[in-house]
Structure formats: structure tokens, C-alpha cells
Image (cartoon, rainbow, N blue to C red; front, top):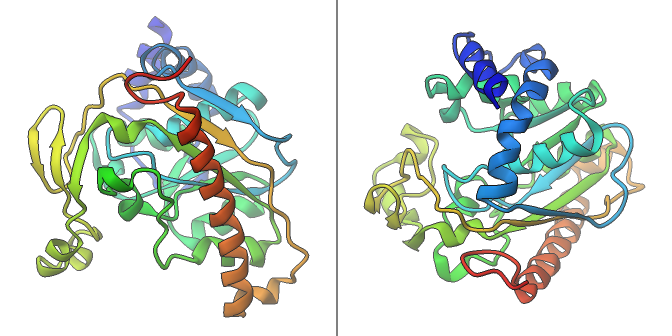
Length: 285
């Protein structure tokens, strides 16, 4: 534990390089894992199931966003992956540019494998043979109203499908539930965001209104959002392969068909996890 804290203190002084794949530091990850594991095992009581053996070689790992800024769904998925395969297996997570600007935290995330979310970075990581984690829904998925917390919401975003096709890699869906119980979002405030020109000014499509710790009432994305200890339940699905050629990335019908195949598989799993109820404030045993 002490060594993990020391690793965080040392890495906090390092310059953040969001587009540099070499920023990933397996030694740092190994030192930080016991500390991260404490939150994973005892605070969030995270439970991760593997539906089928994870694919060898490069893969695009597609997850739903399990609540907002303070819920570390990326770190939960990555920690489960590191425990299975060790930090020595190359893996990255595509992340919005805002967290990189947080003092200390930006450098920690960067060293853990977080890189700026862009098609170019995804392509370079896949070309290295990495498993690349992406959350296509972004803010519209993370900031869903509480009444829609069990919906997979990717909007019109299809870039991940085109990337998988162009690089001929399987898509590995990951579905997580529980963290949306850590706050209450009444509305995602998309119309408010549009009126305030937030998509242009802050790369944000939402301006959620609700209640979250430590602020109480929120109007906009809370930085930070401090989640209470709700249980998180995650399932890693079997890889989805396709025999389509790279040129299919330019075929809107082929892209939509594969997108729907992925989204439907994730929604079915979401429905199953909801029914099982092993998540949230009072998880079923």
C-alpha cells in the first residue's frame, strides 16, 4: 500500500503526454495495483465475469459508461484485465481530454495507459497489438437520466465500428452496472448544452441536472463527482468477429449492421445484469 502511494506521488510530477503511447508505464501499474485493488475489492466490491476467453492479439474493447466523472469504470475494467494478463500485456484506454488536465490524476491515468480519444491514437495502439478500451457513448451515455440507467446509449457514434473494420480486429463488448446508483440525474440537459454552445466550447453534449456528492444539487457535469460505495457488476462478453474486409468501413449499411450487432449484445447483457440485481446500494447475494 505504501509503495502504491509512493508511486502515485512520484508519477504526479511527470509531464502528461496524452498522445504518446510510450507514456504507459507497466512498472508504475504493478506498484499501484494493490492500492487500486483496495477500492476495486472493498469500496466498489467490483465483480467482473468473463463470458469467454479474451482474444489474443489486438482488440477493440467497447464499454458502456457506468455513471459520471467520479466512477472509475475505466480503471475497474483495466484492473480486471491486468489481473488476468498482467500489466505487461499492452493495453490502452481512450479518454476525453479533460481528465488529463487534473493535477496529478492526469499523469496517473496517462501512466496507466490512458491516451487521448481519437481515431489516430486508437489506430496506433491497435497496430502495436494492444487491447484498446473505448467508451463510444461518452458523455451522453455517462450522463443518462436515472430512469434510463439500464439503456446502452451510443447515439450516432459509429467510429469504433469503422476502426475495428479498418484494422481487422475483433470487438470485445464490456457491460457494467451499478455506478448509476451513486447519484441521481433528472435530465441530461442536452438542450441546455446546445443553447450554451457547450459542444463547441467544452466538447460536452450535456448539462445534467440532478444530485451528486459532494455538491448536492448539480447543474452541469460535477468535477469531481465523489461516488459512495455502490457495488459494480461487470461482464466481459465473447469477442465479436466479422469476416468483412477493411473496405466495409466505408459501407454505411455494413457499419450499421455491425454496430447493431454490438449494441444488441450489450443491451441483452445489461438486461440480464439488471435482473440479477448484484449491483448498486443493496445488491442481491
